[in-house]
Image (tube, rainbow, N blue to C red; front, top):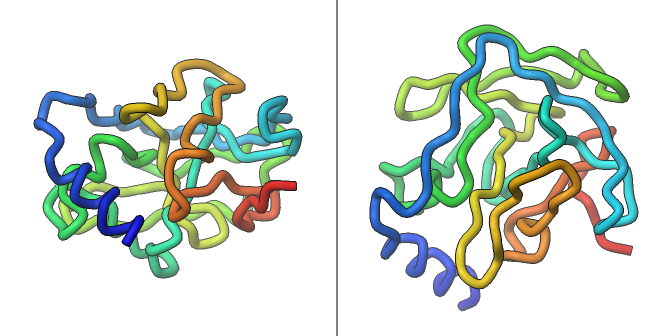
Length: 155
C-alpha cells in the first residue's frame, strides 16, 4: 500500500517539479563517509549520494518518466553518461557498467544496480550537497549503496 501511495504521488508531479539529471561524458562514482548514515556509501563526482531502486532488475532501469512509475525520473534522476563511468576513490572499477534505458539514454550501473540521485519530494528535501542523504528516508524502495554495491541496511 505504501508503494502505491508513493507511486500515485509521483504520478501527480508536474513536469517542471524537478529538473532532469545532466549527462556527463565520463561521470565519476566514488566512495565517501556519510555522517548522516554513519557508513561508507557510493556518491557521484560532486559527493552527492547515489541510490538504487529495489524494483530495478539487474542492469534494467525502470524509473523513467514513460513507465508505470510516471514522474519517477523527475524525483530520482538517473546518473547518465555518453561513454563509460570512472571509478574514483574507493569505488571498484570492475563493478561499474552501463544500461540502456527505455528512452534510449545510457545510465551508469554499479554491481548491476542502475544509479540515481534524489531531487527531493515533500516532505523530504533534495540532496543538494555532499553528505546529504535525504533519499534514504524517503521510501522503502530506495536505498544508498555500500562500496561493494550492496543495498545499505541502516544500523
